[in-house]
Length: 129
Ligand SMILES: [Zn+2]
Image (tube, rainbow, N blue to C red):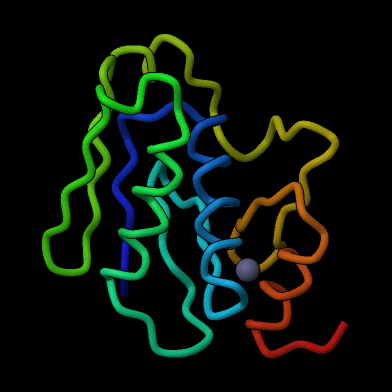
């Protein structure tokens, strides 16, 4: 199981990263937000390097990209941010206070603003829409 440890990022950033990684994987897998981490729900075989490349591409688009770093250790990709404390200051709790544009999977708590991703994810549980 490939994981992205993004506990230093705030929730908006985590959701942005989840969307960007899911987009980059192009249907081979989706990134799910779980306990301030992202876990990759792989539809087909994925290498941690593919996921790390997607994470780096997301980070590189930020204005303050040079303050971020991405480390890979086995199947865990860790994102370091310039201001880890921003997370605890700005953190809203995940789950029950979802903005109205987000959809949440009833089976595992996966959250996404994108209907297409949600559909792909939902089917990954083995259910037909
Ligand atoms: Zn799910």
